[in-house]
Length: 245
Image 1 (cartoon, rainbow, N blue to C red):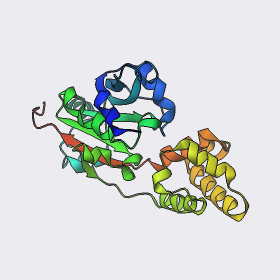
Image 2: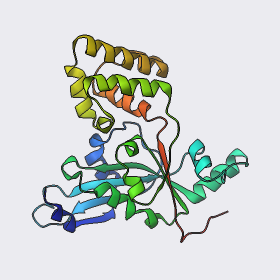
Image 3: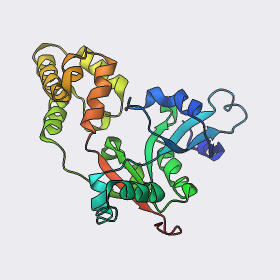
């Protein structure tokens, strides 16, 4: 695809319906929390706009109350308070990037980086954070100016990643649900049995659903979500907005 296409792209406010148009391309299936802001990347070219107007979407959500890596990244700025005052302080100063989705035909053009970089300051918040397993293979948050803080990965996740590599599912593939589903479905013999055992062992730690979920897309989505349960953490400090008390 000709990179000159990016000249016709524009970032504008979005609605939930816009995200739903692209939601199935995202590796996470969990529900969204309270949404603080949404923006979409649209193609304004006269001919293409009518065919594929929405190229990407970014969602900013209200922050979770307790995030261990947030405390590390801010040197304990939000610690030492009782639960409600701490939550009030976090809500007043932090927003979380909960989704960044680019339509597959427009990937590899740096659009995820652009979508993050050009919307960070629009929220006028002191801190913007993000937690994403995809950051391990596509560091667009860092390219957009966010600082990276990596948490240690669970041993079980490391073992599963190594097992998946037996059937050529590598780190770069862990954002592509459809690709992984195809490779798992095509795995057979000793390699297929080996990978299946490791997936079953990994998911069994997540209760009855993890032990009984059948092979297929839903299990792949659950596996990827749990693999990212200790994701890379990113933080951006807006130098033009004061910390609020």
